[in-house]
Image 1 (tube, rainbow, N blue to C red):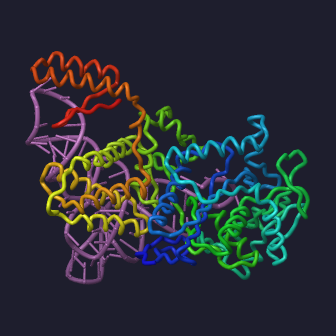
Image 2 (image 1 turned 45 degrees about the vertical axis):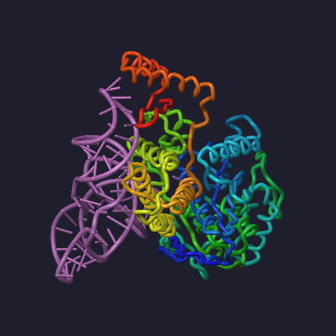
Image 3 (image 1 turned 180 degrees about the horizontal axis):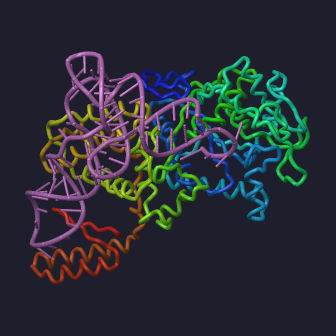
Amino acid sequence: MNIPSLYIYNSLSRKKELFVPINAPFVSMYVCGPTVYNEAHLGNIRTFLTFDIVFRYLTHLKYKVRYVRNITDVGHLVDDVDFGEDKIEKRAKLEKVEPMEIVQKYTNNFHTTTQLFNLLNPSIEPTATGHIVEQIDYIKKIIENGYAYETNGSVYFDVKKYAEKFNYGELSGRKIDELLEQTRENLEGGNEKRFFADFAIWKKASPETIMKWNSPWGEGVPGWHLECSVMSTKYLGQQFDIHGGGMDLKFPHHECEIAQSVGSGGPQPVKIWMHSNMLTVNGTKMSKSLGNSFLPIELITGSHPLLEKGYSPMTVRFFFLQAQYRSTVDFSNEALQASEKGLNRLLSSFSTLEKINPSAESTFNIQALFEKCEDSMRDDFNTPVTIANLFEITKYINLLKEGKHTISKVDLDFLKDQYSLFIYNILGLKEENESSNSELTNNLIQILIQLRNQSKQNKDYSTSDLIRNELNKLNISLKDSKDETTWEFN
RNA sequence: GGUCGCGUGGCCGAGUGGCUAGGCAGAGCUCUGCAAAAGCUUCUACGGCGGUUCGAAUCCGUCCGCGACCUCCA
């Protein structure tokens, strides 16, 4: 297998590294999925989009990718105090339904949303509740290795003990000494933990808790960090290629995952840690608590107060891809509108392409242009540069149509093939609302267009303008080009 | 306070020790009965101050501003 060099930024080493799979052509990738206690917002979508691109591009490079993205359906506590409440249970009480109804409802919702944004489904989508037995076994191993202790029916990971031998904090750049400085103030109040940085891997359940399981330590729930270690190990092995997630999961979540894996007797679990940056609104992280988060539906309808109008899912997808995944992206109406127009320009080239006739020779090097697209993707999935390169190709397509360049049959076929490959398959963009118009509507409007063009030929401009204006009142706009008139809904 | 990151033209956003990123907006032009749409062309910026260098927006130092994480967060 001859695969060109792909470089990926590794959060662990803090530099771009040549990607060499542990067991090529297979690639194993784990991404922290959603906690299904409410609707995913746009910030969440950005992260999943990042890894959708990684999945798509690795697949394009002919790797056989096993992409695991979990569903957290238990164990994610509202906070980490002794009797922290499960996020899903809390929501279930609020909506007065069973916790599993909440799980089902928001899992369904999540899937609808991922489809909306054209995110590919992962190879495996395991749930935390489906792996309770494995999690209990995993906890036992950690205890046997001496890196966890039981208190009051809960089991905590012993960070201090772990740090004696291993480097706790290596991923997030935290020093255990700095953590120690905060010990005194944080240890007040009869905490069950020996050390404030210790984290629960099994949490005792209160009597009224509905979702709980039997364990050697009594009834309880697994800790949030644990599921990812357990399920990644189960489906990808003790060591796998890529682990992804949002930047805000780096600490403590991913740090704890490493500790659990190593503490259970395994090796350093992940070769490349990838973290996608946050979506911001007016420079501040999008989050529900700040009230600045958009739900997909608010985005499409434009019903959120911060939005001037609605934007299609593909516009948002394209907008996200115009920034590199490791940079923050700021959400603004101006930027969205710019993306909307830019995307439209890119996509309209497909129909332009159909009108181009091949010549004997090509006057430009189309292979080189697409090679640039590959290069930018291979440089840590640099989609903004790839898009810039595609716009350059778009310009050539337009120049071809104007006859200012020529292209051979072979090159034209290559161009069509590659343009479609990059835009549809690799960037995962797609046409929208094209098929939403009924055949009848289209035929009726075509008749009106014919009538109008006849009027124009007869220089009967009052009739032609009448047709155009009346259609406009129905939110239908006509677009004249040199050889034809097309229409679209406003 | 600790750790990390960022500051690019009107806006959004790449990148790089010397060679035009790109998109949107603006301007000009083409097309056109008019308008719209579309296309082409164009607009040359890198927070302040020092330093290294033949040359820095890119490296180093410092200051200013902004943000993320520090056990809810994608």
